Every structure is written in structure tokens, then in C-alpha cells.
Amino acid sequence: MVGLVAAQTRRPAKIEPGLLQEDFRIFRSALEEGHSGIYRYTSKAEMDRAFDAAAKQIVRPMSALEFFRLLAPVVAEIKCGHTAVLPPRDLQAALAKTIPLFPFDVEVSDGRVYTLREYTPDEQHLTGLEVRAINGVPIERILATMIAATPGDGDSSTVRPWRIGHGGAFPRLLYSMVGIESPFTIEFHDPGNGASRSFRLSGVRGDFRETIAPVRYPRDQKPDSAADLKFLDSGKIAVLTVRQFAGSAGGRFFDDAFEQIQRQKSESLIIDVRNNSGGADELGKKLFSFLVDQPFRYYDDLVLNAREFSFGRYVEGGGGVIPESLVERRADGKYHNIQHPNWGIQQPSQPYFAGQVLALMNGGSFSTTCEFLSNLHSHKRATFIGEEAAGGYYGNTSGRVPTVFLPNSKVAVRVPLQTYYLAVKGGDPRRSIIPDVEVKPTLEDLLAGRDPVMGKALELARAQRQ
Image (cartoon, rainbow, N blue to C red):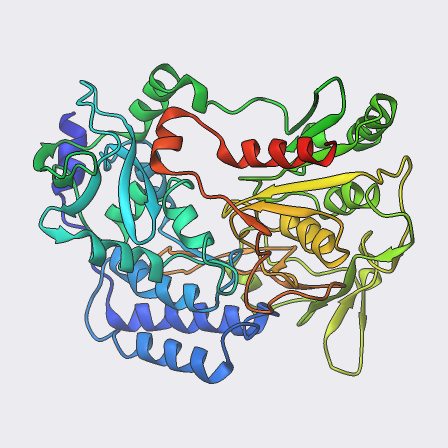
């Protein structure tokens, strides 16, 4: 404990403006050179203004954390959920384990913040309360600062609130972006009786949170499997849950799943990809291939700015060179990845499922998951239930994502290199997949462990047979 107090009270080292300006030039150059989708949602003129405005603020010595706070909103302005700026590694490690952070997980809903899980050593039973202010700072200002610094694809209405709330970023951002540290004086409002109350609570360390979470909230613990299949109503309804397009969702998992669905003679298939952040591109395509009966195009194009990049010297192990055999340089001066397994005409898989498909999604459905959902939507092959997904309808920028370490501040920047253009139509180019049936769990649902999204899907599946 003594070491922890000393670490917190020591004033962080300041970095001279000249060195920070050098880091900023590397930061800007890496994004402009490497990010092939940097102007997909934000014009060059708008990005130039964001870069220039930030550069003008580097006129005094700053700590690495202050510099991180300057860069994060610039990165978020790109509106790409795979692009990120991170504090130096030592601070990341401290945030994960030793710095006492806000002792709650929160739900962000309609611009309000509610306590969802409590990690204080002596439980105070403060879940389900609305947070109005922390250490005298109104929650509106706190949330606005976090939203402005949180990357997400395009103008999805769910991705940023989800990442701050369900994604678990709120405690970390409160320290790293807003600068509010333990102890916390929290002003609460009780939605149940309208009462207001204030508590002064110490923060909790990440290692303590990891220890207490499975004991206090056992139902929150995720299954080990990346995907599973179950049957309801004597096999008439199949429920396929894909938590990640990786691990056990690979190999023959989908082949075996659809063979079982065929044997059961299932009439409805519920595909639950809520909170699925993505994974292997080809697995999303493979799942889709069982739901169509004609050859199809999944990707329209995959574009990179170059095969090698000048910022490689700031990437551990070097930036790497994209093999010439994987790409083709075309008249636009860009490199096109023609060897990707999802490139070109794709074939449907057997056995084909011709029945009703219900897709469940939310603000945690991202990347590969949204590629799958967009193709499903474009082919009018499902009813979509839940909340708007997180990834861009027409694609994202990801693939190879080198991390650039700025030499003076040690702040890290993740720069995705490959922009994906999906072979889809019918969506809003600035948004994600919009649900046909919007169902948003209430705070009471979340606290009680109820799942109204799955409930609506089962209702629709059963109505299909009546």
C-alpha cells in the first residue's frame, strides 16, 4: 500500500514541447500515410482542422497522460473503431492492476449513467442508481469528454455508449481522460423513489476487481466456448450463439451445426451475435454461406495505401512489408488485396438453411460480426432484433493494425492499414445495421438478468408456426 500511495503522489515527468511536437508529427504522419480509410467518414478538410487545432496546443511541457488526452479526440474524429491511441505501457499496466479506479461498472443509456455492478470490498448495495456527479464534476461533462475520445465506426448510435458502459471503459477513462482519481465523492439519484444521496468511496484496483467479480456476479462470467448451438421446442427452434469468430467457432463448427439443424428439421434459426467484437474474416463469410443458395460476392474491394510505411521504425519488430504476391497495384495508385479468402465469387455451403432467420445484435457487435450482419441484411435474409450494431454497414478499416510507439511520450497509436468495402447495398453509408425490431434492455432487465431481446426472438419464431 505504501508503494501505491507513493506512486500516486509522485508528480509525473513533463516532456518539453519540442519533443511533443516531434511525437505529434509522427502521430499525424502515421495516420495519414497508413490509414487507408481515414477520410471515409470525416473529410480531409475536417481532419486537417482537427490535427492543426491539436498541434497548436503543444506550447508547454506536458506529461505523457496529458499528451494522450490531447491525441485521443483527434483519433476519435476519424470515426474508425479499429483506430486507437493508448497511454504508455507502464500506465496501461497500472490501470489494469494497481491504480484504484471507480468502483462500479456502469450502463450508459440515453445520455445518463447508471451503476450496474459494484466492486467495493464492503458492498454498499448501490447498483441501479443514476450517477449525477463525481468529485463535483457533472456527469454530462464527464460523459461528453469520454464520448469525444472514444473511437467507433461512423455515426453508429450505440458503439460509443456501449464501449464506455458494457465494454467496461468508464472507470479507466474517468482516470485517463477526465483526470478524476480516487477517492470518489459520488452524487446519486435513485430512479425508484426520486431521492438524492452522496457517498464518498475509495477506488478499487483491477486485481481486486478480477478476484471479486466471479464471486459477486457469477452469471456475468463468459462461457469458455466461442460458439454453441442449442435447440428449443423439440428442435423447431435452433439457437446459434457466436461470441467470437475465433477459437471453437472455427474448423468444422458451422458445418456440424448446420448438419444438426437439418437433422432436427428446425424451422427457425436465431443467430445471437450480441457483444461479439469480431474475429477471423473468413468465419463470418462461412456462417453466411449456409444461409444463401446461390454464389455470392462478400467483399467488393480491400484497399491499402502502400506495401511498406515510413513509420515502421516506430513499430516493435519493424512495420513489416506486405508481400507483393498478396496485392495488386492499380490505376488509382492503391494496393488491392486480391488474395484474401473472401475476395471474389464465393460459393454457398451445404446444408443450406431455408427457414426463418432471426439475428440478435447490439452496440458490441463489431468488425467481422458486422460484415456478416451487413451481408445478411443486404440479401434480406433475416429479421434483425435488438439495437443498432457497432460497425460500418459498408465495411471498416482493420486487417493489419501495427502499433506505433511515439518515441518521446511513449504514447501508442494503433493504425489499421486495410480498408474493407463490402459487396452490399441498402444501408445508410454512415451508420451500422439498424434493427427491424428494436428491443433495448432496461436497467431493471440488466440488474435482474432478464433478456427481452431473446424473448422477442422466441416470440417471433413461435408465431411463425401458428
